[in-house]
Image (tube, rainbow, N blue to C red; front, side):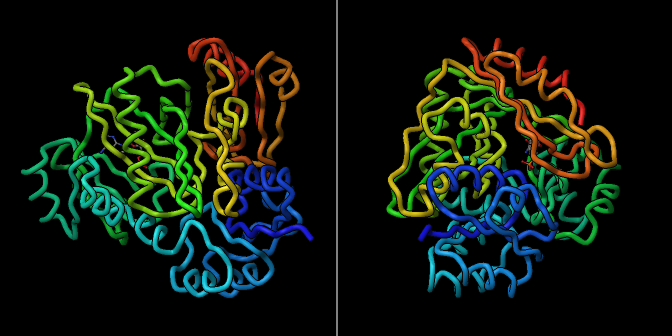
Length: 374
Ligand code: AMP
């Protein structure tokens, strides 16, 4: 009988993980609150329920041989209990470090991995004290559940502090020194249950309104910076000890320093390009990593690639148009996630273009994006 993988979370990441798992011969069951979720549509079955519902997570775990996540919300106690029976990856210990952004930064700092300066804040007095240390601008950040920059507030001057505290009111917060980066780069890295580590090429990312907009590979950075980024990514994984694929987002500063911005304990938007551009996609690598298989090569199979997100531009039922025209372009692949409702800036799909250079691939991906409405 096929071995079964349970995935907590049924969005686009779960969907692409499911495609990869099915290709390797696994059966997949999804847990997601929305019936007919993007991943549920392509999996063998979906359990409808909240990813915070411990009973539902246990129900899923009872039916599968391996448990994994596309979101960081799960409760550590439940995961520890489940992990006595089946492999759970990333582990409760890893998720616990990562899901609190302040704990994550402290973990990195205590392992000698460079990050922006940061500190915990409880009230306005703390922020004012840190302004004196860090200067303006600085970022007020929510510690928990802060996806795609939701939960970040840029404080440029003293008058912004009250507004920021009000906007993020009720959430646990910390403050981070603003990094005047010259580029944002990212590295996907896989670590298997037996500790094998495979690092993907360095990519360059751009964000609009805090949401990933484009990704190009290879990043236009010196060999020295590229190597530094890869060594840092591998070092994060050595310290974390988790299994699975992780996304490591970084800032490159003017003087060539590489700082870690954030770790995602899962497949990541900045690794979607690997489906078309690498020997082993990040999704297949994750499935290999959590099921105890040998990891695959992370080498590029094309000179360059670019990824552009398809973000919603209105509210209402989704209606993808122009997909055929865009996919007809040579070297262009369109991925539509099957979400029934479109919302402003909701991730509805993405486009990857491969080419002779990153510039050419990006040009093609952006042109293909123009053909699509959703
Ligand atoms: P985050 O969700 O915290 O990774 O932040 C989303 C985006 O905000 C990042 O990709 C950066 O573009 C920007 N950002 C976050 N933290 C900083 C920082 N300390 N300095 C400058 N820009 C930042």
